[in-house]
Amino acid sequence: MLVTGRALQGLFGALLAPAALSLLTTTFTDAKERAKAFGIVYGFSNAESHDWSSPLSWGFLAAGAALLAVFAWWQTRAAHPLLPLRVLLDRNRGAAFAALLVASAGMFGVFLFLTYYLQLTLGLSAIQTGLAFLPMVATLMVSATMSTTFLLSFVGPKIVVPLGMALGAVGLFWLTTLGLDSSYAANVLPPLLVTGLGIGLVMAPSMSVGTSGVATEDAGVASASLNTMQQIGGSIGTPLLNTLAASAATSYLVGRNPADKLVQAQAAMDSYTTAFMWSALLFAAGALITALLFRRGIATADPDAAPTVHM
Image (cartoon, rainbow, N blue to C red; front, top):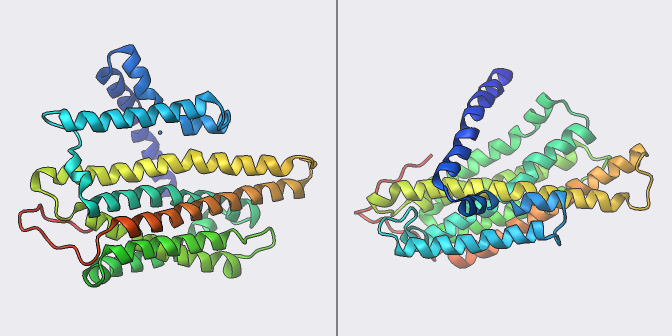
């Protein structure tokens, strides 16, 4: 089943990838504009192969930020904006978008680097590693369901989402204590459960708040923006945490014998814990941001708003 599923993903992914690139090519017909379009989420990727001080890294990041500012300005002037800023400028909705962006970037540290640790350090098989994540999924499902059906109605997102961010930060900081001689049951499972609990309190309420109270004509834009925030968060988290982890491993190897198996293992361990630490810092920053942005109290429903679909 897994092999068939991955084969289908590859098949349709192969159809989507060139289609996406062709859209950029046909949309940005001017060579200079097309170069800018391809250059944007690129600075982070360059930081891994070059360096943070390289113009190929910070230059593209600065250009991307500038283009984003130009896009926001243009949307205020366009007769039919692609992304009406009124969708983003609602305080609760903007906070929900920010929460999804930060959480998606931080979650990368859990899924990718913990997978490396379970397989390469603890020696679990691919199937065993997949099963090892199931307890986290279970706590995530429970907290996601409870937060949207119960907690949001009583305390509102200003408490629920920052609490989830804080729990995610605690779980990820806890994972930084892992070592070469750690075990799954004693050292991995407890922080994994805490992290899953936190992620459930962040993602589901943010999706609910991000699509509630939206005017009917903006419903599609709001839901698409939520999905975009998740994708951008993951796209930022991937190269950012990979770069930080790779830098940590390289720093550990300085002055040591890179051919030594134990040195190699400890260098990899340093890279994992560095990724966990930065992921935890992202969640901690998300807790502060959402605590400041979300309004107090329970969000009131707008009778003229589009219906909200809870998933």
